[in-house]
Image (cartoon, rainbow, N blue to C red; front, side, top):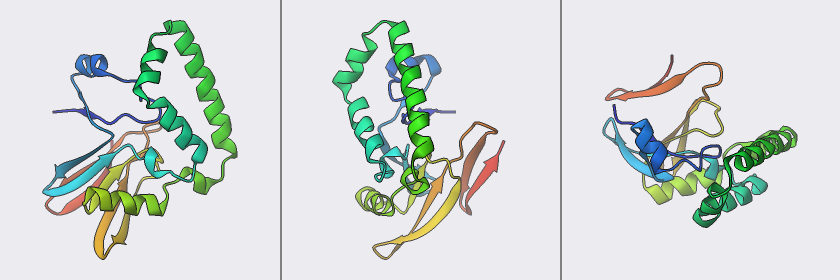
Length: 168
């Protein structure tokens, strides 16, 4: 089974060495794939949370290839300590943010549907599993949100009859 990885907010430093060791392929931040005969946009989803301005600034900073190379050149112990500090800081910041800021922005979703010219989107990041129906420029669209894997695993299954969320 081919495995593709779209990096996100916690694994953005994964590179080709990891992909090769895992037998996976690193995918671009957004990719259109044929899913059961329907062009479907696959993405992490963090770029849709545009109301979280502080996170979007961090995202732009942390996805810069030059900064990533500089960070990865540091000793492992220093990188690990910094990552732990950053994670604690992120948890504290998220705890005081309004719930609406942590979810996708409707306008960003619509713009992404337009830019990709698709009628289906699948993403994670917010981990509020659901199937959303919306209309963008007169076109019926669906947005699937993947669950997290903290308590149990899940996946989406698509065939000619449509899509379904399945728990493991």
